[in-house]
Length: 590
Image (tube, rainbow, N blue to C red):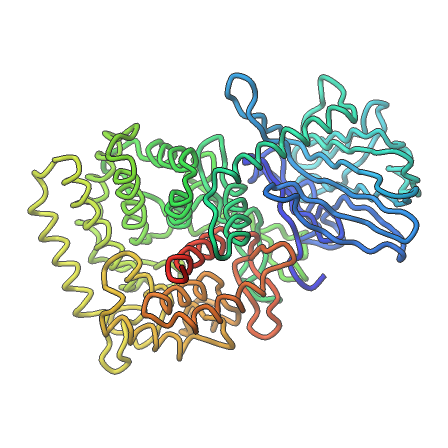
């Protein structure tokens, strides 16, 4: 498979990726950041998978059950056919609590004749770090590993255990099920209980989709992206993940491979801003509480990222025994970027806080804590905005005065001023207003390059950077300002390659980037809409949408030449930008 042709299923506790032929090739249980049980995605030979093998007479197709996160894979031959419905249970129980067990259900529905297949159930626990052994225990098949740590996995099915373990052919004469659980079940599952879980989960997702506004244009794309962002949220703490995978490379054969199973303040805040416009308030309130819980001290600086359970140390390790996606080593767990300083996160977070206070007319739970955070952010920005940082793209070499970081420092103070007026707390207003003006003047003076006729990546640089396009989105410039129009046009000329954008063309820690960063293309299209180039923007948007996989999902990157999806998957950045751009088209096209 030469593309990331996977569907994602999940329950806001964990997730799994299932190939277009129905193979579970990536899953971590009990939670998103747990060790993998299936990791064929990262090592085709060792990683482990759970698949169905059929003969060549079967055609295989895949789609989501409409308005849900339940994946249906259909196997059809002239004489027989069956469907596999994959999902992680999620629904609201009586009493209001969420039912999100760490388990995958696979309902196998016979639709014609007597189909035959083999089951290849090959889990490799703990990132395939040792030998996983299996035992038939009458009620279930248990998989065990005793390497660095003990792990176990329980498979329940109404099919022959021996046929599953021996990979022998099974004739499907009646519907079947597989229930794969991290925990041993107290009450044994049966087909009717699996069907009940399916119906409850289907109803939950349909209800969630019903609450999402309908759009005249690009409605299906917006809804699928919104459902995907929901799957990247972690209910327990309110964290939002950048993606559910680790170490999918930005370019095949290179080493830009990172673990994205964490909560970046920037990415998550951008997600929340978009989801807020779709009316899903619980996700937003949970995330704001996550932020409040992270900042116990008034003078504590935010890290750029945290573990989904609020961990502050995310030490990076390399799993030497895994070959990597398409042999693109290394495979990393943890992420050393947590130690970086990135000044833009304060503005992005303050923008979300301000938007939510406006939305609820300041009648929001924890508003006093949010005011405390506002004052703390203003204090941090006042003391550090003049310092260089690693920037939005997390350069691992020297710090620079990145334009995007400076603009977001301005945003932090601008929104702090607005929040202070909302609350009627104006004692700091005069000082903050002077600081806001000082930062604005500094950016206008140093970020504009006369030779390039554009705002550039960093002070004194001639290099262009797609992140600068967000100056308008955050209100630093107006879309009709000549300098912004010139910047958009310069970025289009210099960073566009066959309709896809580089983040930047300057060499970084690993040389010149060789794939397109998908969110940047969305940003550019969005900017074209803003400056009035609607026809060009729509043409480029439709072309970009055609590069999604068969289910409408995007990863982080797209190869310039082949248009294959690259990078971690599915990517929150890409899907939030898709929604934002599509909503802007709806405003312009109506």
